[in-house]
Each structure stands twice: as C-alpha cells, then as structure tokens.
Length: 428
View (cartoon, one colour):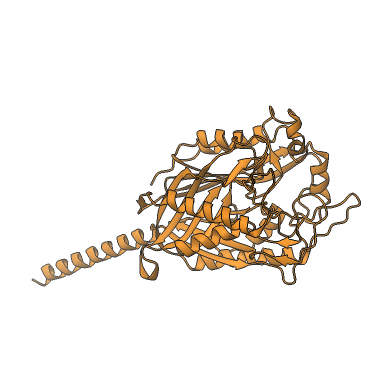
C-alpha cells in the first residue's frame, strides 16, 4: 500500500515537473519587445550639415532630434533596431555604441539614420586642409544616448505579438527629382503589441520603413530639425500609442520629399514637414489596419562583412582624413550587412543610399510578401549605383561622384542575395 502511494506521489511529482519545464520553455520562446528613446537636441544649438562641406550655423529649432530603439527577443535570438535623427551614422560611431550595449550580440544591433539634412555633422567632414567643424563632444554624447536607449528597451522587454504590412502609400509624399515616377511608393510597417498587463493589445512600438529624403528644410535656413520625420513620429504616437521608429529605404538618386508647388517652387517650411509627415503616418496606419495578428512570429538574424573598393578620390579623402577614423585603407572599405526575419517580414540592410532600381531588384528577390530595406544602416557611404548607371548620364554625375565607385552596387546585390539564399524563409 505504501509502495503504491509512493509510486502515485512520484508520478504526480514527475508530471508536475514536466508541466513546469514545458511552461518555462514556452515562456522563454515567446516573442518579447521593448522600446525606448532619448532626445539628442544639442543645447545650445550647434551647426547642421546637409552633406560634404562646412556645416551651417543653426539659430532655431523645429522639433527635437531623437535616438529611438526597439529590441526584440525570442529564445536565444535577440536584436536591436536603432535610428538616429541625422544625415548618416558611420560605423565608427555605431561600433562605439555597440560596445556599451548589454546582452545583445554586436552584429545583431542595427543602427540607421533618418537622413535629415538639418542635424549636426556626424562624419566630421574634413576640408582640403584636413580641418573639420564637427562637434566631437556632441557625437560622443550621442554614442552614449544610443547605448542607453537600447539598454533601456532591452530591460523593458514584455511578451508581444506582431502586425506586419506592406502597401502603397498614397498621396503627395515622395517623388524622384531626376525622374518623378521612378521611386518605390511602398511603405512597410512592423508593429509590436503587448499581450499582457497594461499594454495588452496596445502598441509597444510601430516601425515605418519608407524611402524618402527628409530635406524639406535642409541645412541652409539656420534651423535644426528632424524634418518631416518629427511630425511622422508625433502623429503615429498620438493616434496609435506606443513609440514610433522610422527606417529609411532605397532613396538614392534622388527620391525626395514631394514639396513641389504649382508655381515651380518648393515649400521649405515646418508646415510642409508636418503635412508630409502626417500624411505618411496616416498612410502607414491605414496600410497596417488590415494586417492579421501574428501570435507566434519567428525571429532570425544573420550578417556578413562586405568589402567595397574605393574609386572616388573625394570619398577616399573623407574616409581617411576624418578624425572619426572611418577607414584605414586607400583601396577598400569594409562594413556589416544584415538580414533579419521578423515574422513574415524579411529585412536587408544597405550601408548608404541605394538607387530605387537596386531596391526594387532586391525586394523582388526576397521570398516574402513583406520585404523591407533599411537604407543608411550600419554605415552611410553615399550613393549606391549599378555599374550600368555609374557615370552614365549627366544627371548622375553628382551621385556618381559621391559614391564609393562603380562596383559598389554589384557587390552589395551579390552579397545580399547570398544572405537570402543561405537563410531560412520568413514565416509567421
């Protein structure tokens, strides 16, 4: 009798342990999401940069500059997606932030730039004498703000589900300055919603991916600004809740904000930033509204190192003479390319401004209905053209001159296609 009782007790205990271990495993395999942001508006204001050349003094601001971070975790996979309101964010700065981030693999931290032309110089562009006007103390501070935002987002992880959608954003948002219709009107959205507690069924973070130059205000008006991305953030957070995050796309050559007026002039004020930012936000939320909930999405991240020849004398001079030490070779520059699968979405990173035809080709070869391209991510090496376009048209003289060289596009495409071929297919 005692033996039978002992066996029954042991059986119940074994069953309870089994259920406990299963529940732990299920809990550890659940997708979790967290988000955090930091204001990085310099006080007092400092000069702003729209590209190569001397930064222009800023005397006022329209909106604040931010660092925004989202962290996703499932099982042993953990990633961070970060964006900063700046023209570009070189890996020389991004890698310093990565070293300050806890518990996320170095190459799983994607850092991109919105590409606003009204933020401080993050390249420390050298002039012909090797002098620079960038504020290095400000850049050092931004590095710590990036790390702090990611670490906070990581510490705030909570169980989450996803909504993912890609669709055409309609209305007067973007166009190609060189050839008006040659741009990608698709907008991709990834939204993480809580599944428990105060955020149950509410957005934690909404990521918007769209190709556009945020240069309505530009660098020559004496205004520091996130440009149209600021109103985009405000609108999404007011209408949906949670935190908004923007990642640019293949906006090179020259996919810009459609601020054209009927009199052949342009609207270059904050009101136009608000019009375009609000419209893009509304379109993103409209596209997302019909997306199905992905309750148990998969998470996958991989990376590769790409090596690009430096053919441009101007780019070689910048890379080797900036005090940020962005390069150490006269011949080649190396950078990290990422592929992410987040539920049904597949994401590729581009270390600069790829022209729209490269963007279309990459998306066409991604095995999903939800393709995303994160331009100006992990590095920002100027324009990226195919060898057929490089120096081929008078219109392309500027973008060719501010490109690493003729082979950049071909190497980028081949390396990213190899990542796709060697990675699992995204699925919910």
